[in-house]
Image (cartoon, rainbow, N blue to C red; front, side, top):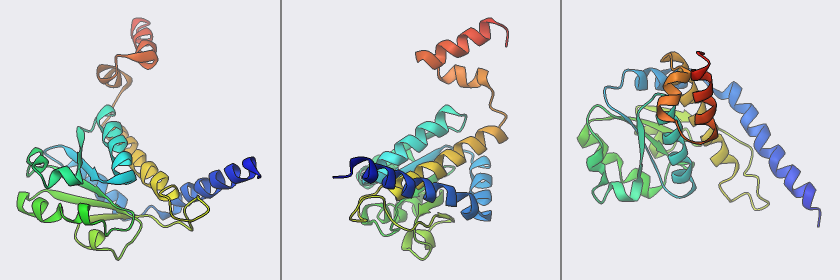
Length: 201
């Protein structure tokens, strides 16, 4: 069993996919950033399964870098949690296939609320991509597991797209280290920022 060989191959597959995102970004990303910047409410991120886990991280990254955001599980959204979403919000819906039933079931509710919708998906022709205002579509050669089934490469690409959104919005919004410290006073990072503040930086 070539343990290191398996691990290195998985890392290379995912690293190559992430690198390819640099050339995949297009005007859809610019439009998504503009839509969020004009948003009068909050950013809501939704998904299920591994996409849901990635979605929680994206929402957390947005919130901690100056873009108010929270996560709503797609299954819970159709059981009352959609009441957290308002007309002025932008909802980011995540589904690699773009056909995840639980995610698609949220779309009629969002249409009634009247909020804007952004898809993050691996399929440009999917139902989700077609029924949202903007679709951020990524492509990749394969998942990194030997069966080409586990959400590995696709999950990492989604995460990186979310980070790119958070960082871009933060920079455009003029978010400074003092702002970051306001939201993140705890832990070693909070201590580091407190030290800088004490030094007058």
